Image 1 (tube, rainbow, N blue to C red):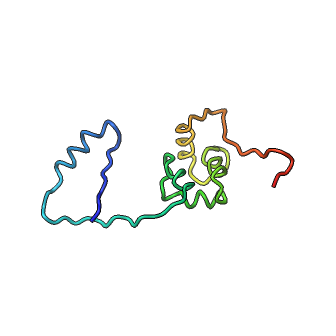
Image 2 (cartoon, helix red, strand yellow):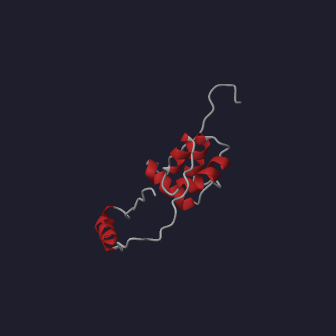
Image 3 (tube, rainbow, N blue to C red):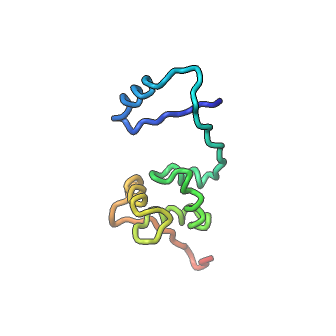
Length: 116
């Protein structure tokens, strides 16, 4: 049958989450939704999915937007002026998570003379 994980809404929700679990019905049969089928994701997708507000639901669209390039995806997820792959609110949360100040940005720079 598998294992189901319950999340609480943060440190301040732990007590309430334990109480909710304690109040649930303990009948012999229980109707439950089947778990989602597992999805194998690339290391790049796993990295992006760990960012705040991204998750596995948005990863494919982000990588497609970035042409499969993780560096370009990070640029698009942190630049507040570009028409990026996620809403501006999510990009602001990612910037805070990464510790970027208002006057800082992530960029991809080409070194040398060969710009292929």
